[in-house]
Length: 429
Image 1: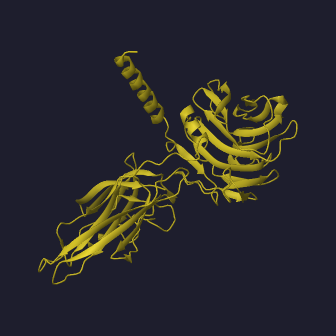
Image 2: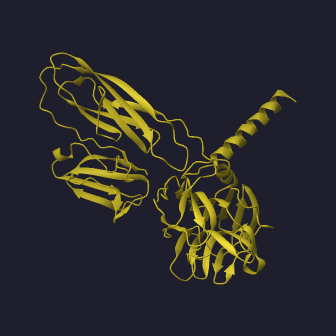
Image 3: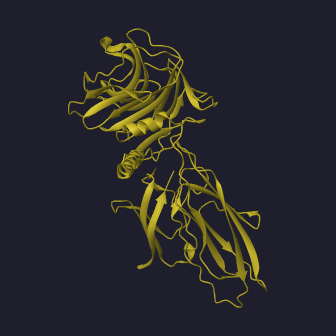
């Protein structure tokens, strides 16, 4: 084989690998993320936390205690809000461990979104619904008494873990068991149907609280889009997607630093959602955001200050980078008599209103020094979602009493009619 041909083949392999890798983005479109690590908390941007009724924490497929939920097959369930789940394109991903097989002609529901006469769901059946559903399958509805047949050939063995995925795109449904597609069906150009009554979203039972699952469920991922095969494989072959390395640096807003002046230190990182623990000369600081406003002392000679910040990351369904530490020795100068201090407005560009007690509000430093202060925050459509005259109460990430989705929001800060600062604010959960 010629050298040129070998190079072409190698480049083709590299290209195909890079294309496949680029297709895997398990954060995109995530609207439900339930690792069940001690709670039914949703780690997606939607924060659609589950309400547990009866289900008990149990070991997951790796043997980790209190990292899955056990359902008794009678009335145990976890209910989540259905508002963001009534979609025509979606993906449901569930890990399931059945403790018992369904009785003949019956089914146990693992996940369901819908109401009377219609839902989208994943079930475990034995010749259920006129022999149409056997084993792990789905019977999602397109209208009253109009549902899709998708079934395996037999009831799978119990007391082992299975990865189940239901995908719907514009044209078809696809059902996967352990990374293999077992069936697909045309949606007949119809929209997904969610019944004629109050829609509920249920984990471990059907939307009417019946036909409950007997076994364990874990690592549920819900998407507002159809996942591709590479993404389904990534969820199946997990448990986690390798975390990309983080690029970060500690910056200082002044050079030189004069004793008696405040100095602003900021961590700039390409990985949002960080948790910050600051130390100055071994003294822990109360600040937990990416910005630390440090007041220096005026002394008769120059002196050093040692600053350390540990950067950690909020837990999610996926791998997070390991915590790391940034260190910097600051030299504070004796600059003589200083002019009257005019404190600069310091505006962090990220905060995490996830109610964990750390960095939950948008803290603006020295806002009290701005006359006739007015603050505007806009969503992507230019709609004002927050306005304040003065800043006595820090913004908590809510609009109309609900937390806004994670993402970037434009802001403008004015003093009267004069623009003081504008930029982008990142919100992450």
